[in-house]
Image 1 (cartoon, rainbow, N blue to C red):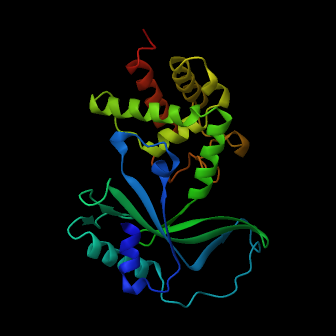
Image 2: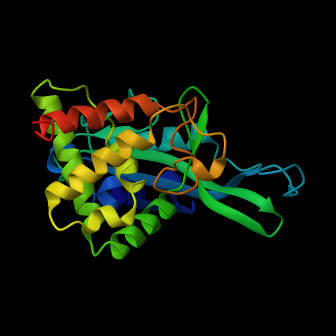
Image 3: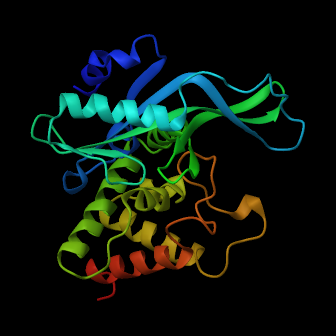
Length: 268
């Protein structure tokens, strides 16, 4: 129905837009308690870019069309409100929230643009550029997240994504029972992703979960490594999991697995 909302909005006629699910729903790592779906509405009318080193990319000129971040956001808001009257929450900094009275699940709809990160004039990484209401922006790499999750799941005989869902259910249960504070679902997924494949091949789920907890606890002890090869990445493999602007820290990861260890009775 979100695609219908886009199609029915006259201002979008002729605009290069791609609508797709991303995040845990698309990656099949979502759980019932976190059942909302993230939807990207990606505009290809212009390409935002950054470069790894000066001169890696030569600009062909500034975009002069109408599809600015504020224009895309305002037209998307109008399209969604026309289709989902009274169900659109636009108070968030980034996404439009659609409550699930006419859609199967709650949805967070994110306007974004094509993005390229240039390593050289002929080598670049494709992603999306998301602009918040306050004008700040962030880079996302949803296709890389999808590809890397699928690859790890294949290498582990389909056990990786099941393990992610188990750890997310543990987090939800601990929050519901006031055992531990809420931990972002994506952060949990990234912690599990950074565990070696061999852990997912243990003979029982009890041993797999134990292995995940122990690995995260041990590897996140101490400060962030200075060597890039020793640092953990998000599932997309493009962004470091820990850096000053993240919403979580290495200690948050250790706190989560310590609480899970005790909650699941491994300490007894």
